[in-house]
Image (cartoon, rainbow, N blue to C red):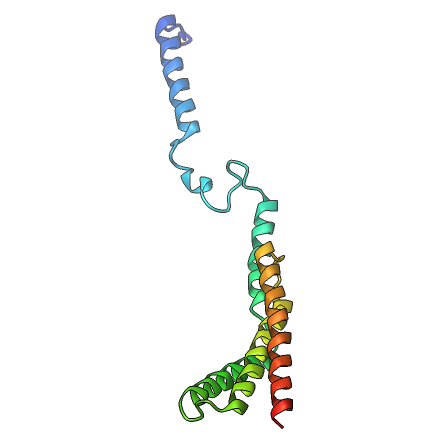
Length: 156
């Protein structure tokens, strides 16, 4: 005689329903399992490849900004050292010396000129304040160098 496959219908549907629900729950997995995907580098909440590229470009611009030619850096250091030496000598050893006063004026103008020249190596666009500052530096460089040179010419 063949085996009978007749089971209680209620038992069969209840068991299948519970197994189906358990399988669905297992398939969904742990809802906290994928938290790492919601952090940096994922495409979560609109974080796209375009934003990544823009951020990488900004980092590259920052690294490009610091790269100045060696001669500009050395010239800047030399002028500031000369400025400090001249100002110390002018206020101590050569007090009330007209030649040192004119030389210090030329050195101060040279410092303003070097600072004005350094803006060429700025990668970011200039703000209004920076434009005003650069204009003041250029004007002061011309004025100080002219007045120092004119004063030395008059003394000689």
